Image (cartoon, rainbow, N blue to C red):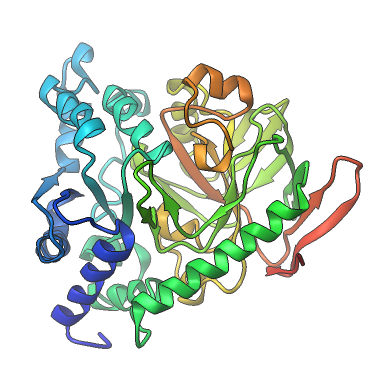
Length: 409
């Protein structure tokens, strides 16, 4: 490692607590982690108390339990959450804890060989339906961050977990003299980029390149967002660390064309690595999906989750990305979505479509904002994929060329 592990972990925890969720004095903290991520979870908990947290709770999930359920659980209880778990999440609507989730799968092949249909049904949809609105409307401050494990390092193909921590440190700007100042500057850059895009008021965004010609229509209320957001209590936070994107929620009814992924991705809900995914889109709906690996998992999710066949996000990432500069394919959505420009099927976010926070889910859908119990980012950008903005009069303006953001104010 570039510095002793304890010092790196302390810097990491400080950034997560004080920038990621921007913890407020007296606030509760909930950390979601896997057992293999205990070191990182404990460091974050310690820092949270130092920053004034009133209570910190670490909730550990174990993917081996999910595998056992898929293999043996009764059909009528598969994917059904316990009442006390649902009650706890509902209580967050009023207690408003800072939510910190750790990502980085230590067992990326654990779900291989399972029945895709039962694996899909093992997803706790009832729990997701309680949690997703907290995130999609920024009811609370929340962030998702990586926590390297040996299994994750092995899947990425680096020498050991220390080397993966080095790469994560670069992606998180922990290699900078003042990481907090570096993040403040980075967030300002992304916000400025979003302001430029919003100033153009594009009607459509088009991605064109090898295997890709996709046009996504924007609603009149669609708004580009980048870097940080503000929750309903006025607290600024950074939902994803790292983040290199500016993104917008498109009108789910107005996408057409075809698209091919330019990087593999890990479909966490299905425990499946997906490679060479190609999608066909007609009248806003994904009508076809093929992949050299993971195709059954993608199709199973589409079949299980309502409105998962519609897009909820369009994002632009250029070669300035600190994640891309590490040169790794992380096989983790948090990191890999920041390697290149991407789209996401499933849930759209209210901060990226003005005037939708106070609406019901049905009203949001009517306004063009997709609502679903999933959100899956797929990277489709590369130096060969060009992004254009299209005005309502049909005029076309280059947004990226050769993986560089070229749009001017």
